[in-house]
Amino acid sequence: MTRRLLRAPHGPVVPPERRPRLPSLDLLLQVAMQERDKQLGHFDALDTKAGVLLAFDGVLIVISRGVRFAFLVPGIVLASASAALALAAFWPRKFPTLEPEALRQFLTYETERTSLKLHDTIARTVALGGQVLRTKALNLKLALTFLLLAVVTFGAGTIFTTNNVNAGRTQHGTPEQTREPARSGASASPSASPS
Image 1 (tube, rainbow, N blue to C red):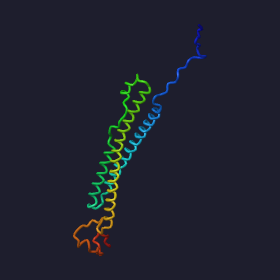
Image 2: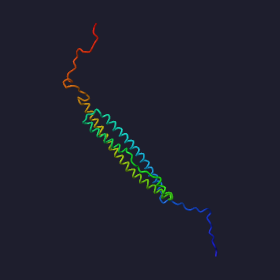
Image 3: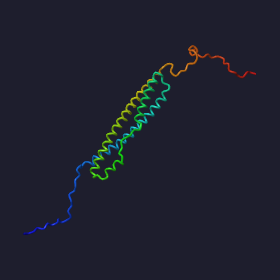
Image 4: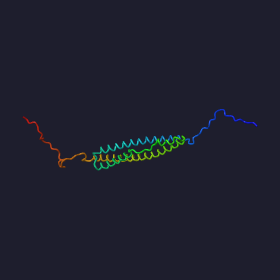
């Protein structure tokens, strides 16, 4: 009976590399985080635009003083509606964020499983953030539309007021007095008497 001895391989035995079960998870996590960063930038840009619209509405109402009443009231109503919508877009609201304390529960999880949970959480915040952004953008579009209508109304009122014959004139006295030309004659002003 011959015994064959098992020989050890010529070097240390290296276990085969464990391939991840979700090979594209890192890529998807990175894409989700980039989308989240884009949303935050878009959120700030919408706030800036809402602030600018709010300022334009205020200035437009202030400079509309000389416009005829028939154009003034609708213009102020439109500019006020625009300001209210811009304020609604600008108003601070809760934007979904990650809470680091809640992530502590994943400390003992495998890296792959933690990455998957993190991806799912970020994907949910991106979806909720998209709803907030759509609401802000809709309010901003409506505010811009009302501002445009207010500008057109005030512009038409300014043109109509400028082309009106009595525009900008203040009449004092009775209509007969204002139509008579000024008479030239000796003035009753005191003058130096000849000596």
